[in-house]
Image 1 (cartoon, helix red, strand yellow):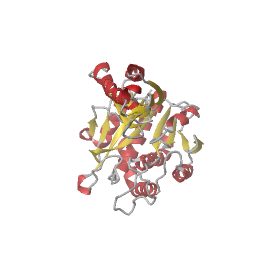
Image 2 (tube, one colour):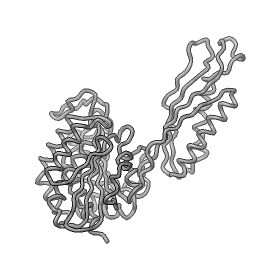
Image 3 (cartoon, rainbow, N blue to C red):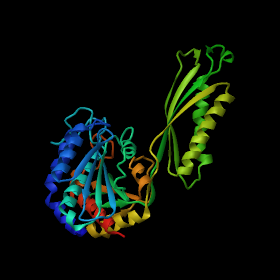
Image 4 (tube, helix red, strand yellow):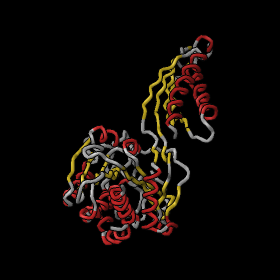
Length: 394
């Protein structure tokens, strides 16, 4: 089946896809607690004769077998929402206070279900297997890694992966592609700095933990400017600084919380090493001491050039070359689909959802975020086409 055929079939099911998306949008769920959402996904896949299995609590893997032996392609979608109050004045606004699909995961889930509808109807036309990877908790602790640890990339082994994300900067009808590093890695850290308290009138009798913390914050900003290659990217953010008791007391303890974002895996290792040294050395020089806890998070998402080439060719066949946009700059945001792309070559695409005439212009994680639902059949068709074309490659 050609890409255009998939698009024609997807357009016929547009209202079905809209209904699925709006139902999920009205009933958002957070983190791993996506019980209703995964139940709906499970029900639809079962109706298509697709084998399903629960993993990582509320993750779901579906397996569609083609007409013969061959490779296996993985298609991934995340299902969780955000703790944001939906302020859109639409009939399908969230019905759950302080929960909202403000990052398009309702779209991702619907698109993958649409691809399942298309591929299940075409299963006699291709050999190999399609794995549908429905993942919880992308916005929090990350559901991808627990799913991988429970074996979703094996039996049969996944040979390639495709995923996508809604992009409010791209007009509906357009697809964004990027080569190489596309999303940053992140490492969170907490720091406790211990000094010695004293009266504010006798600062020489104490060790000012607040002053040590201030110097640490200032010194950390030199890591990027003096340790990172200027053509690479890194960000060190201190988002929390707490300490002190009274205006006339030298504080004996402060607590800092921060995050490091890097694109290059080598820079990531350097960052953890240098940030640790800076904190320890600065606090020691100030007469204080520090305790540091690192919490490594998602790795960099790195697209495979061959997989991107394939997706680009398919998108151009589907939408025309003028509607396939090269996204040259990576984002310093993170995306845990990166774990799947560590296990198999993959392409993570950007789905245009913007429509200024309809007022659909708000950024991700905004309380007014919405999408032009014309994106649904387009993305479902492209996802199905990517899967079949990959399985046909030798």
